Image (cartoon, rainbow, N blue to C red; front, side, top):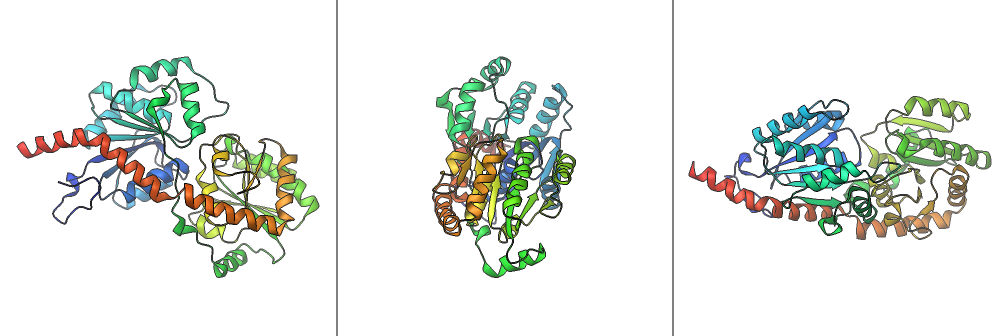
Length: 398
């Protein structure tokens, strides 16, 4: 039998590993999706991963299929889709799933409903972030009390998220564990030679100051505030260049705003990139302008890249960045304050270097991928163990 913390032997068959379903909205590039992919691949020797998307496949889903992983898409209809729960239950029974790891609320809700359709498994529900504005929903509070079972476990990616689950979802604080997001630091080691190559590719002049923001192009990331702040910064320091990395429904709106602000030369929209660690090497400052966040992976990645950061102090951001010590924190939706923060760092080389060095140390101590993965592996083992012993006993009897 495979131990939960051991490597399988050559005689172990893939079917003999406990099956864990990673259940998400979609497998597009995003924080929750990248974490699910990263953890599932790293833990694949102990747990066989199956990926299920409620809504759409996404680019990461396509990659995982090409690598030979099972990836199912349920094509959930808008609103409440009872048939989606039936389809999910059928997939989970067919794959003999021992644990569902539901990322975000809707996946948790549908995985809990699927149990009413005859599927049986514990649920590990990870809440990665909150919507904006966030408020208490009485119907969801009631549903949570009915659907969450003793065998289930709830994880929040930070203390802010944990508090929101208690206040707005009616969950007991005793049932919620905090596991901070983690990043593989080895992917972000600064390299001087690579920095010069990246800057040449982006046609950056030696005296130009490169600012980057990596996030989906949606309303929660508030790129509009970033563009308005950059317009103010460029009036004082015209050598600034701003790069947007990501895709989303706000792309056309942001392109129009860039044109209206006269920033066609200063602002470059790079679209989605698979080489973000490499791209960060050529930058001078990282920007985050969200109105809502959990524990943002991109911010941690920037800190591991030894980039100074300017970020809005929303959600779990203050748990990552300590203002004036490991980065610069500003209020959300205030272009003037954001522009002032950017200019302060643009014009202060020593401050940037100090914040970057302190940010790297904080990321190394609090947000390593190894710690996050070890904590989830331990929780997986605790949730699966009773069912796995029973499952192996039935298999042996056959």
